[in-house]
Amino acid sequence: MKTWLVLFRKEWLEMIRNYKVIWIPLAFVLFGLLQPITSYYMPEILKNAGNLPNGAVIKIPIPLSGEVLAQTLGQYNQMGILVLVLAFMGIIASERKSGMTKAILVKPVGYSSYITAKWTSAVLLSAGAIFLSMAASWYYTVLLIGDFPFMNVVKGASIFFIWILFLITLTVFFSSFLKSSGLVAAFTLLLSILVTLLTSLLGKWMEWSPYQLTNAAATLFTAGRIEGPFLLPLITTVILTVLLLSLAATRKSNS
Amino acid sequence: MEVRSLTKSFGKHVAVNDLSFSIEKGHCVALLGANGAGKTTTLEMLSGLQQPTNGSVSFGDVHKGDYREYIGYLPQHPVFFPWMNGMEYLVFMGELSGLSKTKASTRANELLERLGIADAGKRKVGGYSGGMKQRLGIAQALIHEPKLLMLDEPVSALDPVGRREILELMKLLKETTTILFSTHILHDAEEVCDDVIMIHKGKLAITGSVSELRRKHQEDVIIISAEANLGAWARSIEDWNTVSKVKSTHNTVEIYVKNAAEARRQLLAEIAERQLPITSFTVAQTSLEDLFMEVVGK
View (cartoon, helix red, strand yellow):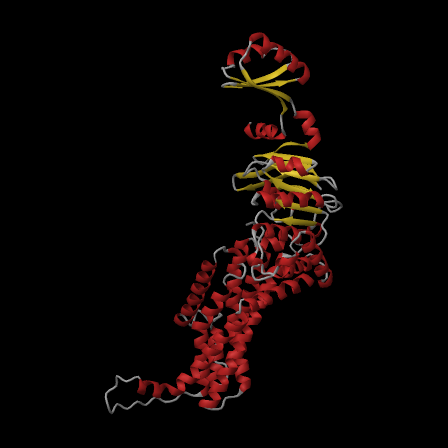
């Protein structure tokens, strides 16, 4: 346990020294702010974009607060995932490549504490980033568009975060046995796109899919309560996450 | 440390084959072998980084299990976090080895001082020279006062000055710690070590103390060079009973003899009698280097 804390502290020190603690939340807050602001100013933006004949009338209804927040989740699912996967793709792969893993494991350190310390710090940082960003998005939505209960934002963000948790675990899992960080990112992104696509295309067959959690969170924002599958995807996601993490933490590679 | 029939294979390739030896407490042991002989694989198995395919390693009272806290290990190419400074790195490694933070920092200060890189402690490791990195690597291996220090090619990558410094350092360290280090340079082994383990293609070739090997395998040799080809004459002396082996190349003859004094007298008389046009006459001893070449060459 003591070595776990030492490793955990080292991860944070590293993330501070390479500014990940700053730029990841910053990027997320940006994505979070973008949605309410563009929704609100969309008519103005279109008007100023020119290219429209004189006298053209633009009528775009300003979306409801809940819809804006649900769209924010869409932003995270595109840009946010990319940022997180790129930020954490090398979390183990790069240390294995440089030989640092060996230097650490030659000390009396358990391989599982080495992996879980990394996983925990990645999860905590992305949780911080997403909740901060969600709060910012909520604040601007309330300011520009209309009131929305904060508790629902917290609930929705928590449900959505379980999907992100799954993706981070997937990144850590690939990172634990691939040597190239690029491959880690490629595999993780491909798999996440595949899950997303299949879930949208084959809704009926994919009720267990972790991606359903995004839909659950979105309906919580738009309709005020969760519609569609929730418990089933929650259970599969938790099981998959635990499975991937334990595979990553027990699988000790020779190289 | 006792090593019994240690074997490691990667697929079909057998990197280390049935290796058994033991390391006595307080000794300095060199693991010698040509490139690719399996030195690094052996050390990594001893340090617990790789699982042996077969065989066992026991350390002191620990027979099966984790003895990593008793060993310090310097990898062949020590790596560090470039964003840490030397001091932070040592404290980090010390804490991983189970020291408390205060104990780790006292040890780190001590070691930086002792290894002569005290001024560099506050600098980022990214800006260190090769020699300094090697020192920092040794420092991190020593941080928890291990019972056995394992160094993988500690001097191979260094320039002559750095290498001299590290060898001097090892001489100091062997007063207090058991050392096992791998090298392909025999001279280094002869200089600092008590015992030598030579491996060739993953197999144990020769093991013993340096002085014992010298006594057993060292021969007196007389080297004669001349202005003319001595081949014919060399063959004529092969069956003398003081001569054990004769090697001749062009104008030089190497004569391995059983009794240097006796052989020298006879050879000088022979040379005078035949009026051989010699340019030099050297009485020497074979080095362990020759033994090594013999082992590797066979």
